Picture: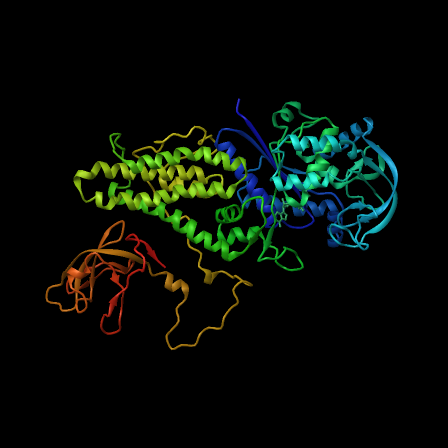
Length: 639
Ligand code: ME8
């Protein structure tokens, strides 16, 4: 039997359209669900919408539509966002569905029968925004201690859940189950909260005040308090009181993933509700941190709410997914800015990953006719062994980090393999091996190893960037069924030799800052006045500059100015004719690191073909060749 893994996100309020905060929790849950499926678990990933309550009723009233019609409309915004972001949820629960409302009512009935609910006249301070009562000592200068809005005094009869009687049990449970509330800072917060006496919880609202909710089965003039309704989604969706086999397969949930804003409702309300109805606790409740935008709280009034659909369209779905999980440790708060995202996309995705794939496939084409060779077992390769060991350890490391929800650490580990892949190319110099017939076996082993590295990276990327993984598999020429547990028992040598590769377009095109509106981060400056015609960044970026090492040089016959150079640019050696003979002799130029224009159309100078141009300072006469301050590998991009 496969191990099971049940993960949930909050059910999101439909009082407004989704933003990056919602996307963040859901993407994180998606990564965990995909990783568990890939490593052999049977996963169930639940998300959905919270459709009752005051906030939703008010939002519907504002639009002049019935609450159901209003929610039916907003829910599609969530569902289509999850499609756009390639979220692999197994179910989507709406709290207005009968399968949910029925279970809420049955639980209420049971609690009443067991004496866990009671009716009481109540007089207290009510916060309309938070939909909850406060005692006189809680309120601060007539305002809600939580949202700071004015509270009003209300006297009414209501139903209460005997939450307080579970307090001692809850404290003991939290203390004796170290991984139950995570991270530890949140656990300590909850234990701090529980140092005060835990009161009973008002779980009804009179319909005279709020009618958009689930009616109490035993008191028709009341609806259920929205949290007592919403939290139940975690069990109603998996067949509680309806399908025992299904329910026992999934419950207890492995992780309830939430933001830190709803820690108390999950760690105190939900746990005591579950205890009262005799169900096991979820294995873990993890509260992640809060995103601000350019240092400010996201809000409609500030006009800085980040739309995840727009981000995905502007930067690519996988780049957006990657950035959210790479940028900040999962439990901590973070700041969202487009410029930080562009930096990561360009350096880590376009540069590190894009280059590795592109260079490797170019070499397979150039040196092996596009067909992945068969490696020879006799190889004596320390480098290869190092790579095999690193990749071999990866699954354990990913397991550890993802168990701890340290997404950024898991990504750092994967990037070690990306770096190793790039270093491997530099160190094994396949372009040199290709020139030596006797090194042919070595070359084949190197080319195969490159493909194997890319195979493993495809699997490691998959939970984070599923579309990228699929595109990589296509370019590598292999078919991977990601719904299979491909990372269950990893073993080196999985890449099928004889595969014909299919190099395609770059996976992550560089994002040019000039084409992105970064306001308010970068104020628009007036264009400089100059007599030199200005070109756009797009025009400049068309020029491909690279470092190259001059490996041979000779004078061009009958020319005083020209030298014929052979320049090593990593994956090949270029012949370049340069007008530098008045400044340099062939002997002194050999071994120098120069900068070349790599995508110049070939031309003939004095009958000799030139495949590029070296850059030099000087106007009419050459005064000095351009180089780099720190020595870098030939073929390094110059930006
Ligand atoms: O609270 N940064 O729904 P909700 C990070 N319906 N995460 C954020 C965020 C931000 N700035 N803003 C929102 C509700 N989130 C209830 C939940 S569950 C039984 C009922 C995420 O629409 C984060 O996961 O206000 C947070 O907990 C959740 O959205 C709140 O969503």
